[in-house]
Amino acid sequence: MRRVATVASLITLLVLTTSAGTSKGSRPAAPDLIVHNAVVLTMDPDMPRASAFAVTGDRFVAVGSDEDVLALAGPNTTVIDLEGNAVTPGFIDSHSHWIGDRELYGVHRARRAIEMALEGGWTSINEMFVNESRLDELTHLDAVGDLRLRVNAYLPVNYGPHQRFGMWFSDHAPGEVVGPRLRLAGVKFFIDACGSRTMYMTTARKNDPTRYGNFHWKRHELRRMVRRVHEAGWQIAAHTCGDAATDEILHALELAFGDENGRQFRARLEHVIALRNDQLRRMRQLGVLPSLQLTFVDTNWAPSMQRVFDHDQLQLMGRWRDLAERPRLHAIGSTDTPYGETYPNLEPSTVMDALTSATTRIQEPGDHPPLFMREQRLGLMESIRLLTMGGAYGIFAEDELGSVTPGKLADFVVLSPDPRHVRVRLLDSVDVALVFVGGRLEVCASGYEAFCPSTIREA
Image 1 (cartoon, helix red, strand yellow):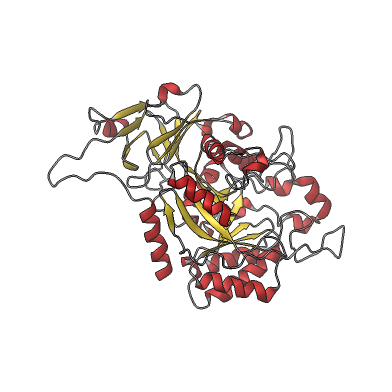
Image 2 (cartoon, rainbow, N blue to C red; image 1 turned 120 degrees about the vertical axis):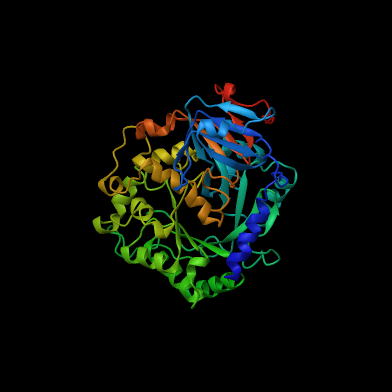
C-alpha cells in the first residue's frame, strides 16, 4: 500500500491546481472559461452527458446545463458557444514514441512532434522508450516550457535479446515528478517482438513446425530483473506479443508480487497480440492491465497472419473486444505512434485514426477484415473510454484525468461533427477542432477560429 500512496501523492504534486480559493461566506470567483451549447461526452458515469462546463485555472469547476453553468459567468469570463459540436476529455496515447522516435516519421524537431501530437487530439502521451539521452531532452523541453502536453516516461531495462541496460535509473524515484508536465512513470521490459514470425508463441507456426518465435531473456534472468525493479517500487510495463511471452512475464510478476495484492501495482502488458482465455483470467487475478494498440491487428496485418498462423492461433489475435468488455481488467488504449502505421511508411496516428481502426479494423478504404478481426471490433464510446479513463487508470491518474468532472484537470478536445453521428468508416473525416491542456488553448484548427479565444499561444 505504501507504494500506491507514494505514486498517488506524486501525481497530485504534478497536477497541483492553481485555482484560487475563496473566503468563508463570499461568492465563489467567476470562472475563467465557460464552454456551452456543446455535446459534452464527459466519460463520467455519474453524469455521462452535459451541455456546458466551466474552468478556473487548470481545473474543471462545474459541469451541467447551459443555464446552470452560464449563471456562473463574470465580466472577465471567456465564453465559447460551440454551436452543438462535441467535447471529449483529453485523449491519452498510453503507448507511443511521438518524441523519441520522431525521426522515423520525418520530423527532426521535438517541438514539431509535440505540435503534431496536439493537433492529432492528444493531450497526454506515454513515451515508452526513454533512455538517458531522451530523458535529458524531455527534461530540457519541460524546463523551457516546450512540453505543451503531459508526458509519462517509461525507462527501458532492455531492448532486443542481447541488449541489457540494467538499473541505470536508480538515482531517480518511482513516479518522480521531473517538472510541470513530465513524470517518470515506470520501467519497460521487452519480452519478445511483435512480428508474425517473431512473437513468442506456445505452438509453432503452421508453415514452420520448428518456429516458436523469439524470447528476449533467459527465464531466471527475467524473473530476477522483474523482482529487482518491482522491489525498487517501479510500475512495470512489459512489451509482450505472443502468448508464450505473456506466460513468462505473468509468472515473473506473480513471483515478484508474492503474497501482496498485485492490483495495487498496476503492472502493464503492452501489445498483448495473442492471448488465451486462461491468460485473461490470470491477468485479472494479478491485477495486470492490458495495454492494447487500437491501430494494431487490422487488415494490414491480415495477409501475414493468415500465412503464418493456423485457425486456432488466429482466434487468439487482437482480442480488443474481449479485453475491453472485462471492466476488471482496466484495459488501456493507444496507437504506438509511429509504429501503428504500415512499414516502411511510418506515420503518427491521430485520435481519429485510432478510433477508426478500433471500430472497423480496416487499414485502407475497401479492405475487408477477416472474421477473427471483425468479431473483435469495438464500439465508438468503448474506444473513447480506452483512450481517456483507461489511459488515466494506467498511470494512476484516474482522479485527475480521463473525464470532464469538477475538480479534474481541464484537458479537453472539441470534435466536429459529433463522431457518434458519423459512420465508423468515415470517422477519420471528423476534425480535431480545438485542444485544451490544463485550461489553456493549445490547438485552434483552421476553419474553427470563431470558437477560439484570443489567448491562443503562438506556435
